[in-house]
Image (cartoon, helix red, strand yellow):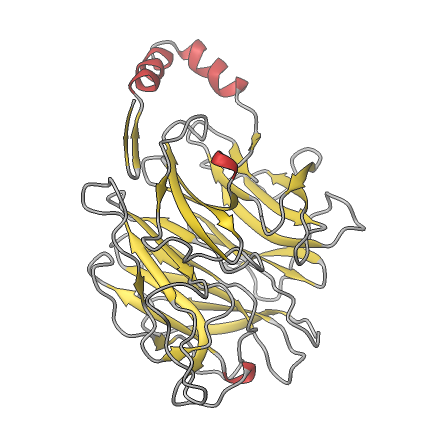
Length: 403
């Protein structure tokens, strides 16, 4: 088997696939034998898995290893639905420049139409280059880092900091690549010319129209003064035809930690916004979010007060968010993840019982294409400290989940 970054070329697997395709009966048996939800450990003992599925069905997986405050990111890929993976390649060019502490500051990954892999993450306190300095203290902050695979898909280019005039990077940023190859990296922070504090934080977006070779300086995504929850993550999704969806948690009057959805129909140049869910809490809940698309349908998922919710962003604005019925009703739920299969079925994954410096369990619920629960919910103990679940669809049907 020959391994290339972003492309796994498994000769034996390809031959087997051709053999299966030779008889309809064997193909049907192969699909029927595959579990609807296959649960696997992250390769090489990693934590904080993040996945993206390319147009060719290749699963791109990034994970964290090492000291939680200053570790490394590794990338592997699979062309057979997560059954086998390529050898690991380190994403961060500077050792120890990634962070897992807090769960929400880790990597996000996307693949462009040509199979090139893009990764963005919050830099650790040891990361170089440093971020923009706080204008009052003159102390350089954490950077928002980005790296892409090289032209040969054999390694990652040196990491780059994308912040130019925003500081106090804290909660996790996000990454997306659209069908035209435009790369978007988003984060929330304060402007060096603005007022400090959470209520003045904004969501910022850096765009690259040359496939990640260069980025324009970050621009505010939305003008509304909602603030941004300092230690909460966010999520972005390019949904085709110039549409860009973005989720984040606000922070006003210290207690308003509401979830907002932003939508751009002009490739991130302008956004409109709407509040999805309210939550009054005088603390930073350290939450993360998820987005998934199937055709024109786009679903968002988030946590509010120990429960995870999801909502169709393309449906009625008045529709109430839904919460999955599965899992333990006593355990606090966090870190939802969504994925659609080709047939329109949906898998929602979340953690239960995880908290600061504390692991927990994984839970999930499968839904059919009509949005109805399909079978009982699943659960699996053993989510490691600072980790989450991740889910990807398989070309032959069903899903593979990593924890």
